[in-house]
Image (cartoon, rainbow, N blue to C red; front, side, top):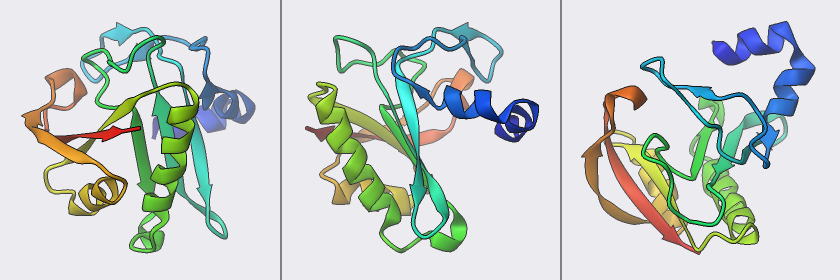
Length: 151
């Protein structure tokens, strides 16, 4: 909903905000209302004969380690009608190439405990499950599996 409101307010500014490899944007507000500095990152829209989803990459300069409030380097989502077509698997593979290009040696991803489809996508791209955990309340407090993909 926040994205729709931002698009309605200023579509050009919203699109510009999706590409911020210099982390020049505003601070990020977490679920608990606290704010943290923005990390470098960008979002790619997935076009598979029309909008099919998104994939994003975020990082911290000079290290593969992320701050505790960041659940992973990469996130993605595919619209329901385009799932089970290999779109997320391909999008993740392409973003892994970009992560290599910015110098990351490995990336961390997370998937909800119940999200078996996302777990399969990560595993298909070389992901190794590192274990289950509960994310901090500021990030939603849900059960996840943390994955690592060596680049």
